[in-house]
Length: 151
Image 1 (tube, rainbow, N blue to C red):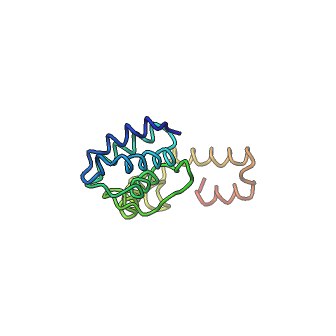
Image 2 (cartoon, rainbow, N blue to C red):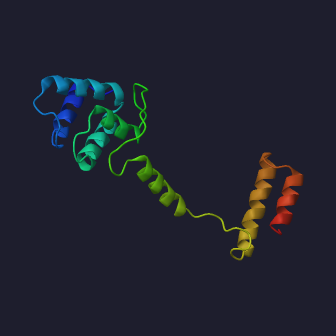
Image 3 (cartoon, rainbow, N blue to C red):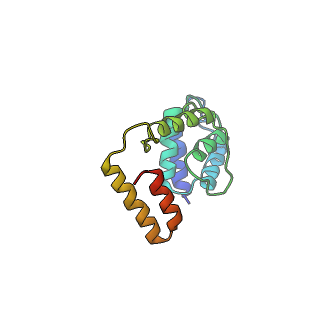
């Protein structure tokens, strides 16, 4: 958990966001209390403050700050929120970023896509043998795999 002092410092840093409720001690106390409730660790608070300052064009409230936090961390109080509205962190933005990461992953070529080298066949044979040795594959399945990969 973070301390009230750490939360208060964070609130001071967040005051640079347009329409942030500066000067209202009651609102500041409510935000500090909320941060202490849902932020678990100081490094998580640092990420939240930096990300909010860099991506919130204007203050959208504690609920939106929590939603931003929930995009990366599990809240300490267990109250997870979906549906962040901050640009770059909306559900659509996160889905797009995920799809881009997945599309850049390297997968084994499908049968027939590219020629399989002798080295590839040796590696596959070693993997099959290792699976049999460890008990993850029986001999019948191993024989089927060897036949499928023409080993």
